[in-house]
Image (cartoon, rainbow, N blue to C red):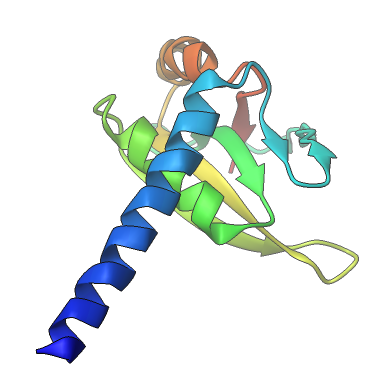
Length: 130
């Protein structure tokens, strides 16, 4: 019985922690992390021929060095109805960042429609070409 109580208390603490993080994300005007404001670097598009029907565009909503924060943002974005994935990427300094990516689009117009919605959540969202 004490083991069950311990598990319940641990779960309650985790739920409260996640609720606090979500509250911070909703009330913040800028995405911020413990070390300061988060800056999103815009990747230069790579010129490639587009084959009809190929999914070549996605929207990057945010990027965090903390996987928990990226997962929380992904859950919020998923509620908008778009497909969302969190993709880890290793930076030149060997640090891993977790990118929150939304959708696979075959046209820039579809990607722009998604971008408009995502910028309501995070102004730094941008379109990436795969």
